Image (cartoon, rainbow, N blue to C red; front, side, top):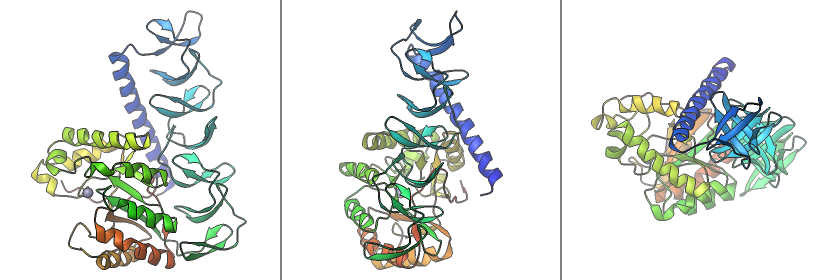
Length: 395
Ligand SMILES: [Zn+2]
């Protein structure tokens, strides 16, 4: 993507976020007697609640001009850094939440990856900081990590949380030997985003073990199809995989009959994700993909409306350009292996659709991952502002 497009997208995203947040704020401030930020008679900006300055409050609060860092009831215009309130963790500059800002910043709990002004708790991989490239896990700089980690520029040798550009030689993981030059794994430059839909389920644990063996990260588009396996979402998150919303029911009648029905279902799976990880995700995938025509049977034009609304809600949706076909005609591990390994040859960046609820898919993974690594591919986690592939909306 060129720079102008990228800047335009960021600015649009930031503006949308401001709209969403200001709407949220407007709704809550009318619902409860909420805190308001205003200038008092002495010209001091204070945070009020129930008509009084709320001296006990330290956090983030808003007014029509933006969101502000509050310390003991007053706006702290000297504050710069990561501050929190009940809605999230925010990057504040000179007292004001800086929407649209990206970077790595700290507070007393550590260093955090900021995307569009807020900590992105689903950021995983290698990110650029002012003094080098850092390994981020669950949005936080992880200085305890030594090993390999990837971003869209490649696969890197990490030493105590930072890319070690001095590293030369070899590194072994899961029986694969990597050649490293100046911190970078030598490979074919092609990226694979493994994505697993419809779980967690009975085979997810087995899959997590295989991914862990090779140190490979994937992205899980989760549902509530098998509620007794919901704890696996936490396991996926804790292992540094991407977590994205698929839907709660995956039932076309529920999700594609109306846009309202879809978002109600979406909120249910977000609640599950929040219970398991502590946070809502900004990544999602529509069942059947955005190009599905089955939804037309339930509601004409629903995909056009939903894709537009997802953007308005600051959600990033993902389709795929390589299909394991494991929810289609392919029912064997051999078939899944062949579909993936032949599919990824055609793309520099492959988003591979798989289902961790299919035993033959999970049984194919050890061999598939090994083949891809031995042939020089790098596995990456989906990121909101990273590579994406969209199909044509057909309803
Ligand atoms: Zn699905």
